Amino acid sequence: MDELSLRTQISFGWITNLLVSSVMLLFMTIESVLADNDFRSLRLDPGMEGVKGSLVYLLAFYALMPVCVNLVAGFRTRVFRWIAVACASVGFVFFLLHHLSHWYFGTRPDFTSHVLDLILHTVGIWVIVNSIKWARLPVAMRETDNAAGPGLASLAEGQYATRS
Image (tube, rainbow, N blue to C red; front, side, top):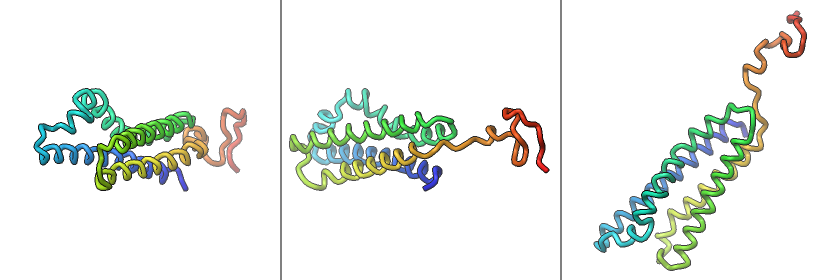
């Protein structure tokens, strides 16, 4: 699989995570409105501190990751690719633990309340797998590395011969 395809799939996965997370928040809001319980569930999770402290940054992070993935593609090092793998892994573990805590404490009573979480986990695994594949790819040589062009020797090699 080529690098562009992997970057596209990774970017698409981050955008899908952003969409699913936003839809989850939307459904929680709709549920609170329909329950007519003074938004009790939203006040508990994520709560005002959760919205101010983490949800805003999380959604911004999801929105910026596709940009970052494509931005670091031209760098000569794979370090930033592995940082993207770490970011995807930490996000996945965080949401998995968050979901498991809801399941453990019984705050999600039926299967329907787990569907979007399961989608988020599935997409998270997809992003991690593709990010690892991308991080393992060799770094492509930039055009400027071969500025002499085909048939001409590089000045760095100490040769000044032209093509015959």
